[in-house]
Length: 363
Image (cartoon, rainbow, N blue to C red; front, side):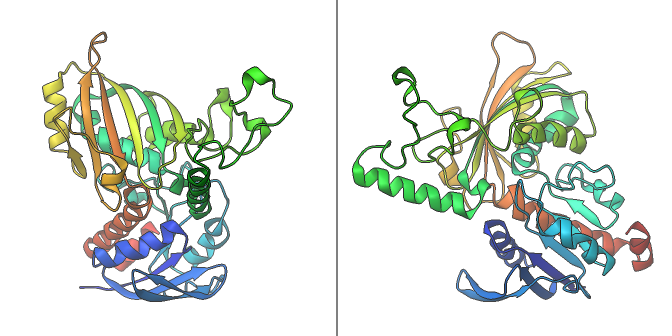
């Protein structure tokens, strides 16, 4: 079996998960190099890894470069991906900087694997919220079409990075010590009128994560929707190659450490019924379906798992061909690290079927 030299760029929560996934899946590694802003040693599940300082010359003889990415920041991929590609590597970027570029494939391997063949050295990993939604709906879309999707997402703080996780821990401990959920961090300014105390406005500072639900992920933009909410629209259209689907969403940060949950309402184009949707979900690749309405997936039960878990499927009693489902997935794995490694596996598969000359032409 051919071995591949792989670089992992970034050792935050997603980068660490990439190292785990590469090992767990027995990826055909030749050389593994790990880069970050500063050199250091890290321990991952009892195994020591040497992290080197990233430079433009870091990618010599690298076949595949996995950029862990940081949501909302123009990070290492913007600066170093062109250098990696120039050195001959194929870049898989988990950040949000390249996803909607027309010349960059946006790939979920179970949904649109063929898109990787159009790459020019760079492949984008979709947003975690988008990944689990399109995977849950993929076979439904193929069989019946989708006219509309209404998404309500309840997203873990790990989606905002390690600092947010640490902040939630500290706030929870402080609130528990004082035996009141409001003691962790008081965000209410004295100039708020008494009848509005207990409310919070984005104009008045960052909200408390513990014992709270925050209906803002990303910055506010077009028509009052956040950047996270627009990602679910634009990325889904690109992945399905179908901008006719009417999509709207509300994305909420909740005090959960790992695994995003989504309540998804959808309307099919073709006439169907609950039983047919159930059968499709049972056969959907990468999906675990819970048929019993009283047996449903939860964030705590899905942490560390690779699949997207779907339950609470039900019909809208007032609108034909409209359904609800509940969807949960580990945002650090299928929502980020695992999806990126699966893309790398697809690249290896394509290389196994294509000559190096042909692959260079694609590049």
